[in-house]
Image 1: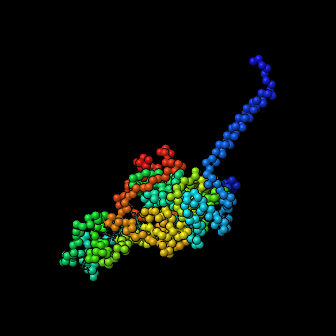
Image 2: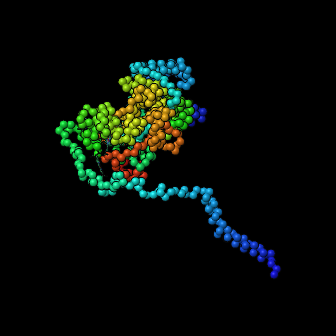
Image 3: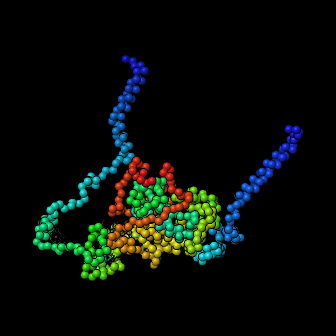
Length: 204
Length: 337
């Protein structure tokens, strides 16, 4: 059967069409993968890294510890003896000293019990009043770290750490150790200049 | 009318005479009015021959500078009867000044602004201040939403935070670029200064500054003798004349000698930090390395040397409920009026 040029053309077109369809079906996906591979594919992270599990396991009640490979309750031992009871005494003197220092509510946290002319650190080391900053540093480590670098508190005299005039204010130059929060203060008067009038309500 | 109509020639010259004399009188009075400010001129303010021919600061040689300082000393003595110590400290090698301000600590007390006025011999009448303490509603860093006229019985206000603004001593200062007479420039230690004797008062710099840090002396700055700070420098706090622009110079008469700026010393909460950013152990270097630092209006691209930073903090009893910030429907909007 003679095939007319017209039909040849049709067959060729149909063939091309099938080829294209086949390529879209099979080939294109690999092509897409290749393209995506070059572009940014989301980074794969270790599921551990995004786990919602807490990083450490707190004690549960009743608390137990491993001692010599044996799990023991606290009461196993602590029922056998009693610890010193630290009760705060009511003051008859120094009544003007009102502690507003949060949980830090014991005079002897800071003042030495036997030697009243000094302050005391947690390990019992006595420090003179002139070095009270080391006292604060025990409980306010991060602020102290900032203070050491001049990022908290204030430096007077010179901006040059190498200068003899360079003085960093101690904590108690700004904070009352008994009630360390900063009091709100009355602001000084605002600007009066005629070129800086307050904006009217509609203007904003 | 019985008399003959006057001929054209005559009528014209009479009218011409009238208009001519009116114009002459008008012109003369306009001229007099234009010159009238001269009546208020204090002969003291007239420049001497030497000061009239004084060169630009940067073109003076050592001797001419000495003479210029001596003239300032004389003028201060004449006008205020004060023995001034007029110095001309130069930028130090290896020093680039940077300021850092702790937004978490600032309580908006405005002590800095007032200490600055006292230190820098600013005009008291009319008032002129370099530092603006902006009260910002929580939820925005948009200075358009700020208020610097806040009046409160106590600061800080729990619903706001405070953002003091002064010259940011930009690394790419637009104020310097627009000055048509090069009366303002950046010094090697980063401080942008003004030669008040060279400033023509066009106020281009004031308009170019994105931080509203420059101030113009619209009228003669008034400063009482007892208010004069005798510790002066040519490029910073010597008394300024009317018609010139002035600005914060990081107190260069103090800081170039190693001292702290006056605003820092007055800050009761230690929110202000100053130092040499080229020294890795300086306070500002530590802040830039370790704190969450930002600059104001970063998008204008002037590279300020004035940084703000935050500390983590949660004030006991001081926290106010957050109302969503300005620009949102909420009761905070009405409150902040």
